[in-house]
Length: 355
Image (cartoon, rainbow, N blue to C red):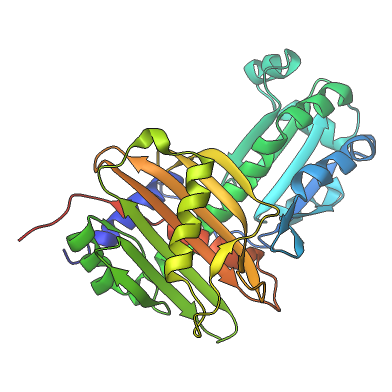
């Protein structure tokens, strides 16, 4: 089983990355802040659409303190080439516009794409890794400002999703780059004993490994007042029909009440009754529920954000719950949540190994 898990992680990255074999020199890694989007838009477009774009892409995540997913920074089009290697870029233009950005956008379109934009069939066009690795360049294009505004409102969730997915892709690349430090003996043991595995980074330790409860929990506490918690729970011979939001909430609360308790056993982790979102999603090509919100101790002495994926796996007839939480009272937690999200996305199920 040696190196088996590393192979599955490479397969995961292959689903995110397009690998081109050519004689060209490798592209450099994208630069800039992961949570900043460089925007190019003509004055009229920015005046009309800027506030809307900020509402959509500077969406707030509550950890429980409010933090913005992204910050928009508008730059003049004369600076376009200077930002070609930045991680996140957004170009906003219209077919009837006369400014530099709109003229650039219009001149760049092929006839078939132009026809779709004119017909209102397309408005969001993404280019990945155009000048650097792990880079997203998004074009927002409409026949005119009014129609583009309508398209942005209609595609708002998609737009934010594309940037978030790129951030997750970068985190997965970073996890793979640190792979030589991973605790592969634990990863191999999980696959052999339980039929699933995931990355166990070098600075995490096993807090609970219970075969009878089907509960595996790893923690990172470095520094001591900044903790990251990841657990996996699975239900054998599960009924997929009972999987919904209410089931997720009840299951998570029952697990954390049993296993995630304070040292003196006076309090336990529970879902906080505010800023909770449950959405249907795709997790590694499986239908899943994604839950994001905040947890708190039952005595309300502390809390933080969490992300949770729960899904039914046809091959094993199991329901899996994967969960990552943060306890970091004095620092921004948005990046930390992304890090545990990345580790959850290294999860892989496989055939249970027997001697």
